Figure 1: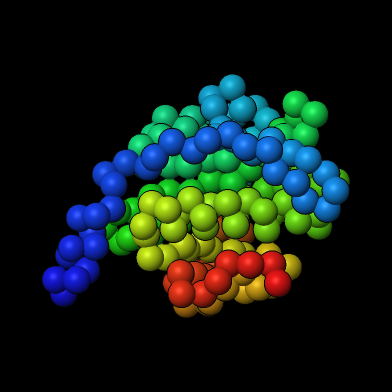
Figure 2: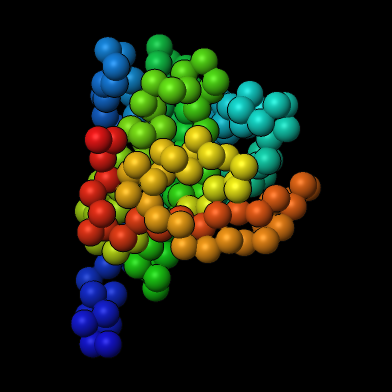
Length: 185
């Protein structure tokens, strides 16, 4: 019990700064940076492209998330000054967890390692912060995403019945305890 208590006090009260960086995957170069309010329209358009015209998150949802930089980290990935993907994460100091809230890549750039790259970046950031887990939910029907998450060390831990708004699809909760290496291999 005291070990957990002491670990909790070593965690920062707020997330540290994320430094913009140049990243490469499969022969392409991208800029990875923290999302800003100016990116919100792009984030909604990406969701519309990924979810057949129906963005699960609205402008106000992204605005709310981006207005909490001490507890949220939203990353965007750019190619030629165009945002082509994003990933969001929420920091929970008490649970020693960083929870992936959403991740989306425009369809034309999917299956190019960008989702893996973004999760690996979030994991490296999470480890640097000192949390012990990274968690997420995935639609029960999204077998491709769950296979990716499992390859990256996430384990299925729970089913949330009727979790998703609208169609009430179940969500599969997945957690990576950082003794599992996050790697695409």
